[in-house]
Image 1: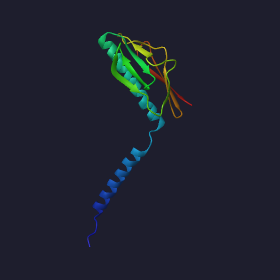
Image 2: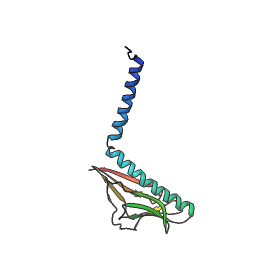
Image 3: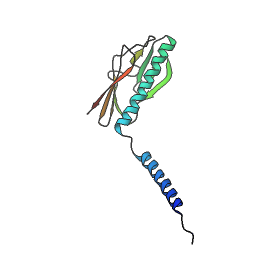
Image 4: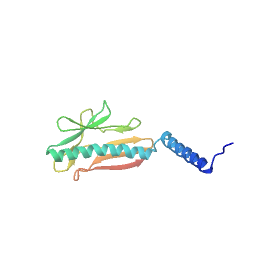
Length: 145
């Protein structure tokens, strides 16, 4: 009768432990603060692309709201192909913006202007995203409800 060696038993145990760890990580929901950070980073990337586009082309570039499709897109008279969709389980407040309204405008000198802020809500977290007129960089305020 053939018996298993200690090396074989340890190898199988290690493989099963690794598979269990991957399964738990895959099936577990994303923590709220991580989901909020990921969403804010996506919007910051869109704003960064619009700012760089304005500096490269020497023409203003805006980030506009499309309420029907729940997304923001960069445009300089026409849509540029840079966009960010609001994640499904997120609530948001675009302020007084309606479809096609600009949220932020970036200038060739790297500065920016914006009348409003984007407020994201996810579970018990709220994050207000606004633009710094001097630096043209996106800034955020975190609030727990």
